[in-house]
Length: 320
Length: 287
Image (cartoon, rainbow over all chains, first blue to last red; front, side, top):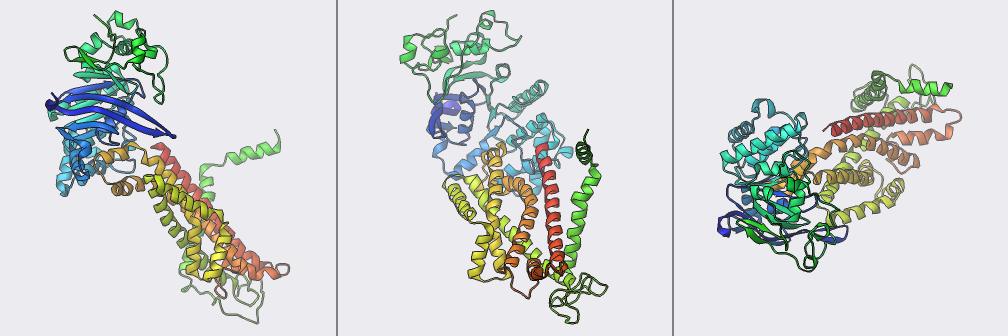
């Protein structure tokens, strides 16, 4: 089973120290990503989505658990081997302007990964830079000598995508890549990502809090709540027939005309997210769940397969 | 409306061009002229600053001696130019050395954090615990006063502020996504410091250096006035002020002319520094 995953997370825990307090932003999360698929990772802010994305590229590495990429455990790799492995996995950030160095020209920003990986020939670097700029639909002649602040947010995100592509990675973590962009630009960037995925045979982990965006782009969707995985399954199944009450509430609270499912639309999430410093016992969602019973307080639900390919961590999953 | 508010309003309505002339161009011209005279002092038709003319003691300004002569009959204009040479040499090298050391300490402590940062911050607090002039006086008293020692001592006094500025700006950039992106590409820490962080913090740091120059020139003048600076007969602005001080009632020009030069130079450096800083800051926020 694990053999076919390009990226396999096993029991990943990410812990931080903040103002003297120790807490786990992500606790015991396991899932895999198949080669060539797009996995959407959704959840409210602070649920540990980005921590997972960052722990995959080992910045910082997870405190517990394993992350396997093509069967190799990343935390066991030497610095050098990890350096080489980094060519295979890149990341795109939420704020495209902040993820480009304001003092460097586009040419230098894009050639940096090549120089780090040891490409020396100027001509070859220039060729690659022009190639990736064309790939993200930007004109190399007018862009290479400009600095990031001369571009719009959407253009900056294209440059970030170009930078991620230039090393020809197999896998890209997209950490809320369209959240800070206008809706019309969002569509452009999403289409671009889909195109590139097809052309370059990429595998994507698409992290977002925007359910509509995730639905469009993902083959499968994983839902997180307070550092735990609630539900994972095929995109259509999750949106049409969510099993976890949290997924149900999350989809129901989208203020959108897109969702026709009346039954889902009637629900919405109530209450605040509990603190990560002191998470509820048992099922973490029980404080906000309408179906919670005593069992939820005492026993933490394990992830189990309810429908084919759809796993849920809930004692009383929704039925259809 | 009272006259004062009218006056204040008129002050606020200075056209930008006039403002730029007074706060940037006149100071810049003053500094450039002074620099040119100091650099080419040996080629200019100046009197020898060490040569006394005992037929003309404490002379007021005249066609022969432009700014007059001092107690020993030496030409004040010539001594001011040569004295500025000392002040500007110290005032250039001390802040530059201080900036380089401070930049290094600040960037390293701001990037790596942890114990190194605590150590650097502690060290700086220790230096700051001594008043600048007292520290400089103590060291110069034991090490002996010479231009080189003066530069070393004054660069030490300018390390703390430089370190703090560098550390503060490093902290803001070290957390940015572009640093993380560089790490994801496999860049080493050294490469990140050099390629990603340094280019961003060097400009704001440079904008402060002119202000440090003016502070250092003032401290140098104070030390010379107190008699622990570069020893006589080498002319220094502070030393000249001290030397003319006993005669301030009868011959004020001996004290006031070097003081005026010192004042104008420091003012110009501060004004240009402010302008530079505001321009850099505007560009930062525009990004």
